Length: 378
Image 1 (cartoon, rainbow, N blue to C red):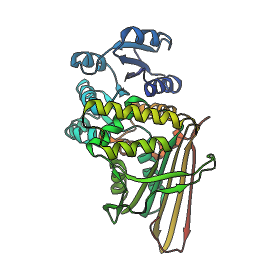
Image 2 (cartoon, rainbow, N blue to C red):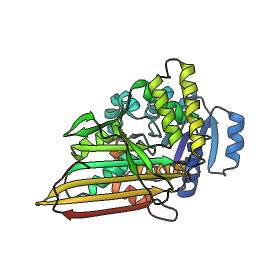
Image 3 (spheres, one colour):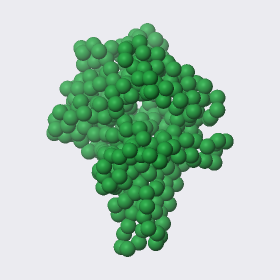
């Protein structure tokens, strides 16, 4: 075991953590150090996973215990939450130990809090990747991938995202409520001529061949997509997100009532979201769907790109697959050092080649055509 890279995983007994462990055991030969607060249950769980895995008890808020956990790891993955409570605690411990860091959560808030780490990470050739989830995370990576495929700068771009058929965890629900409370994400907004403006078009209905009913997608411009638009110089961007009906209605109710004034309200709102997601599970089988539409101009001709990525299994399994690929790319030194959002550090075409190859991979389609039509907003 000593000759193989050691990967530390915090929150390994949670739903996402277990998916990451299984993917790393299946797709890599690395040894794994799992961390959690319950030593007895953690040891029992780890004993079932084989000789490549061992358990170390750790409380993330205990600085010395966290220091002991990350020591000796080549890379640490944080699957624990809520992200708003952990913030940059593990990221800074990983840097001090000289190891790479991956965080499944941690969007705009964590990105801003770790700004001071970037120069040191770059100098030490270490990678700190944030938001390795399905949204944000793969959403930004897929958008970036599609805009790379265009022969020239896209003038108008739309990203559509839906995830249904899965119960939300309490941790994920807490992070959503904290995001609403702290004002991150821009519901009913879009980019127009490089400026954030109100999107008055309202929800858009889409019909997918594997669903019995239409989905309503609502405009929601997040930090990740704004950074992709800046990176790829696309001035007009509309992002639309769908959640199942009970979950979406509960989300609107929490936002309207601002049900996050006290910690007890935050917990109650999160429980309401979890309950709503359980109701929605009765109506859908698990699926995650992305679509990107883009238009641009080259040599006097207009081009149109239409791309789709579909995953018909629980999304945590997709996240596990993403983590296994990302870990392999970083350990093999195929990354840009520093502190980055998920789409900013990796070789994106190579990542999608690995993600969409092999048995049970997500289905990817990408079509690009030229036409002689006037560009308009999608």
